[in-house]
Image 1 (cartoon, rainbow, N blue to C red):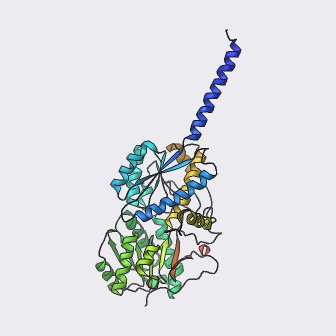
Image 2 (cartoon, helix red, strand yellow; image 1 turned 135 degrees about the vertical axis):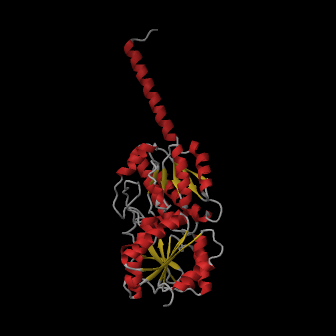
Image 3 (spheres, rainbow, N blue to C red; image 1 turned 90 degrees about the horizontal axis):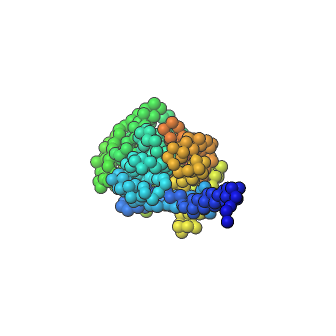
Length: 409
């Protein structure tokens, strides 16, 4: 039996609709795959895993609400404790993922994002701080978290607005020693700190650098002790930070105020040094779940979700920043309607959310280098074995006060 032309067209149209529907179902069934590049082995594994815990919680929340673009989101881990491993992890995952996210280590982010560009994949960085990462202007690199400059400015603001008043001094009357681990992470923060402190009138008593892998920091501490600074600022990672604190304790180095940057605020530090030694010390930190609800809406919800999933309190504040960064990435994918590099980059460029939109207190607005300029750190203080957010004032919970600073003049 021959079909009329009209019937054939109707059948052909129905067939095309069926194919289109089938394609939509296949797309919906296919997950959005994100490669999470972090150290999952070696001395930094605990913190790379903590960053990924933040990703997991954001992904679970999105999937429970129906996913993104009607698709579930899946994380695939790429273990990278050094730059070469970062490149290898990207090469292994690139055929299987749509976009990359990371990274606890700036040096790994630097190498891994470059490798991701060769595969035309976005590298969405939530946690690495080195200033050079965005200054390279790679067309695939976007950073949702704070950069080195934000931490440098935050630490100097803490000196001006918190430490100087607590010591009863003007900033111009303070001497400051700047110590840092010597990778692009610590070096970029220290350089900015020096410039900003000098502009504020502070005296730079000295600048020291050490490798994050150092096993003896006695000479470092003795040089700083001889300079007798009022304020000691250190930027590093957990292993070298803890070693520096232990060495300071053993050598009797007690500046009037100690401010660690990016480290010094973990249970590992507490168990290594003890509450008595840490009492009063300050840390320029990724925002913590104890921030005031108006400052970081949803921070307590994150902490509760973390405890339900992992059975303990968050280990480090980097996890909350990673959680928020993953939320931003998923929002950008939804807005782009795609994970394609150019479309996702355009969606990020259009993001415009005010400060205090996220649990960290961040907003979302990317500059010409695709650095989120509304991602700011906070300052915490060790008080009776607990980490308490104390600065800026708006971030501190009701009833929180600055305790006496550690050290003796």
